[in-house]
Length: 188
Image 1 (cartoon, helix red, strand yellow):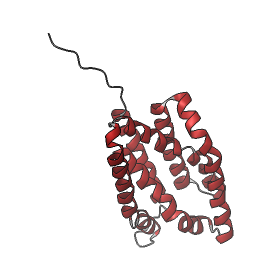
Image 2 (cartoon, rainbow, N blue to C red; image 1 turned 90 degrees about the vertical axis):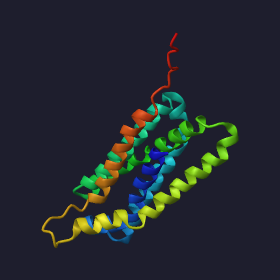
Image 3 (cartoon, rainbow, N blue to C red; image 1 turned 180 degrees about the horizontal axis):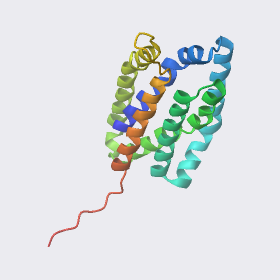
C-alpha cells in the first residue's frame, strides 16, 4: 500500500507541474506543450498493451522494480533535462512506469482472500484519493520555491527530482515488501 501511495503521489508531479515547468524552463508555448503531452499519451498507449505480456514473461517482482526504476529515471530526466529535447528523452521511459502499478496491484490482490477483494480495492482507491489531496500543493509549491529569485539560487527541476526521490524510496520499500516468503522453521 505504501508503494501505491508513493507511486500515485509521484505521478501527480506530471499533472501538476508539466505545463508550468515546460513553459518556464524551455519557453514552450501552448502548441509545443500540447504536442509534447500528445507524445506522452502516444508512448503510454503504445506500451499499455505490453504491460501484461511483460509481467507474464519477467514476473511481478521484476516488473515492479523495472516500472519503479523507469518512473524514477523519467522523473530525474525531466528534472535534469537542460533542454526541451533532453527533457523529452524521459517520456518513452515514463511509459514503462505503468508496469509498477499493474505489478503492485497483482501483489496486493494475491495477499488477501477473495472475500476481501472489495475492501482492498476500496483501500487502494482511498490511497489514490489521499495522494491526489497532497498533490494540490506539494509539487507546485516545490516548483514555485525552486524558481524563486529571493534566495539567490534556482533549481527548476526540483519538483521532478522530488518525485524521483520518492520513487527511489519506493524501490527500497518494494525490495523489502516483495521478498519471497519462506515458511518459518519449526522448532522441535
